[in-house]
Image (cartoon, rainbow, N blue to C red; front, side):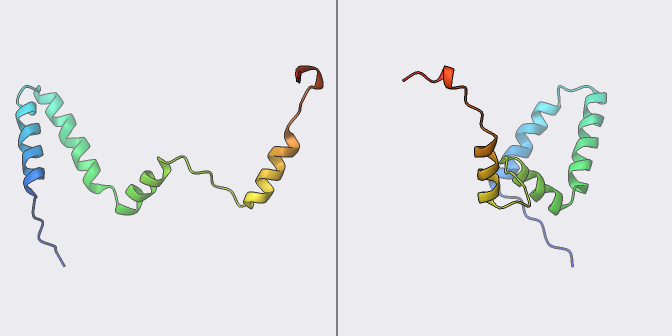
Length: 85
């Protein structure tokens, strides 16, 4: 079923503002812009969500947090000569 898409006042303002900016672009630039907009429309929602969560820099691993912390602690190497109290 098709949903009726309604633009908010803010979206209309943004579209009009960008439209005014596009007036100064060359035809080639406008075609490039159209291609990028078309690609963004084809991008599925799942992919957008994945990209959103990737931006947080989460660390993915099958290991437990305790195992990862243990590995980090065990891999530490201290040179006693560098430690001066």
